[in-house]
Image (cartoon, rainbow, N blue to C red; front, side):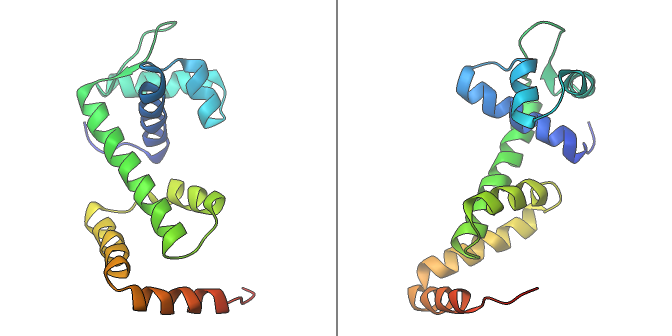
Length: 144
């Protein structure tokens, strides 16, 4: 299969989210979720189908194949972890954390993600240090 682009990863993640919610994905739902045109979605879905990651035929439901499910779960897990890190450790707003996680999930390795998780765990296990960090974050309001 090989590596896929960050854009195609977004499609897989969207299909996975829609499957969790609705059991299947429709091209119109994918386009709405990703805020794109249906024609753009169609092109991307054809590429994902050619890589054997999704079941796709025009005018039919779209579902993930097993390899697509595995990849989509990894992407979504990265996304959720990075969003949580931004919110809980860096004290970034939920909206900004969502945007940052969307961008970072595509290039952070599993090994590097473990460091983010490790730091979150460290703060959970060391409340006094977490409190010092929280205080430091609330004091730092610099223009940049």
